[in-house]
Image 1 (cartoon, rainbow over the protein chains, first blue to last red):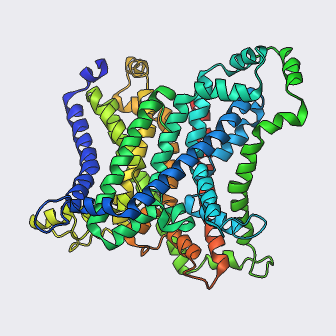
Image 2: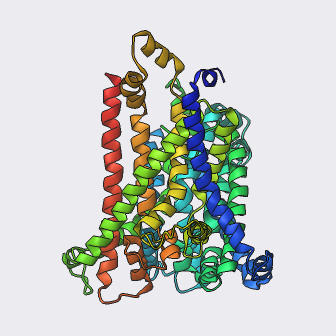
Image 3: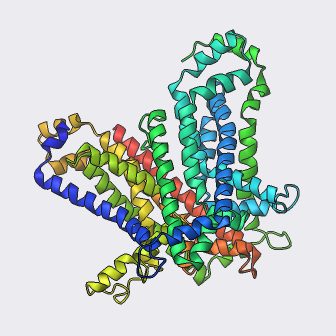
Length: 272
Length: 295
């Protein structure tokens, strides 16, 4: 506050102007989309497009399918990341650069390339998975885990940093606890908010995801479903965009709320 | 940090040698199966013909005009949106952190940025069609004001239209990355500089910018990769009509263009090479600026 009071008037006006431009950029497309989604009935504003979307049985099934994939991604991601991050911190700190490099792979291999590689590897023996629906779902969840790995690993690792895992582990061991008890009853509960913030971010990313979903499971997932509806019916597409934005908003707020506590105000991308 | 005499006792309790590695085995098996193996198969595939012999033909086929132009458009869009988004994001972050705005403006901007940076793909494309498409709200509004933007050469489904759309997730990401760095600038540094007779310009040139350089470079490179790998937004917006490298790979996977199965591998390989170069530049630049900072 102190610093703000000292900023000269001209600078403050300029700041307001830049913020105004940013606000314009942010809100105009939203307003336009909401406006468009309400014009399905000619000449009047109506919620017709929303009624049509919500009464489409494929909407519910695609939505629940993607939500299931998101939750599976969270579960698999957490099971993979938490014990690994814990073990690296406790016993194998020399492996930390390797693991960090692996978690940053999605920044080098984009989703479209990864899904191409996954299809190539898993469409022939010895790892044939693309011939069954369960198999493609496994691939989809695996791909999503890779996509969210940078954020999830970082959230969990930062969470581990905040608790004294060495002392906790030794205390538990001296009371006779085995590794299973230590991980499930001591490490997991202490990482609750880090895991939760990772989960919200995962749901945000996975729910409308198109690239991997369209090549692996097609219209069963929410992203491809939205894409198809939008191609044929513009108003319903706009309504879906608004619904999707509301979801993104809700889960990002949850992520920021929990994440601020878990990561001490840090964002998913650290500045340093 | 820990006294070394404790180590043997702990080791004795939970096995020695290779036993320690079991703890990280699931993670490495997962990484090998779903990250390394797919990448490796693309690498091998791009140097192999249909009979499985070594060949450079796939790589050579990248150097045809249409594919080179796809790489070029992808790179230019990523550069334009990384630099544009980086600049605008920096200005926004500066405005709300050091520009004399009230605290709520900063909190609101960071929240909006968190939302917008995650808002991409299909719904983002729909939103921009509703805004700047031929019947979009802004297009129609400007038309009633006497400006037909499509008449004067704007097209949402072209390079600049796509760049404008990408900016919606690019500049918020910049805000998220750079705002904490700007807040990390200590007021004492500025006061010390001013006490030594530095002007605002001197302070920015010799103190603040060098400190911020690693963060800014890192952020811009991240934005570049973010746009370079984008597929869903471009596909939904243009219906696959824009010649981007990701769109080409998508078409290869769908089997639209079956005349050369090796081409998909080579396209992906080229993309990984560019992304890896991107990250390598980041590390070199950052190390250099850190070394410079230490002196």
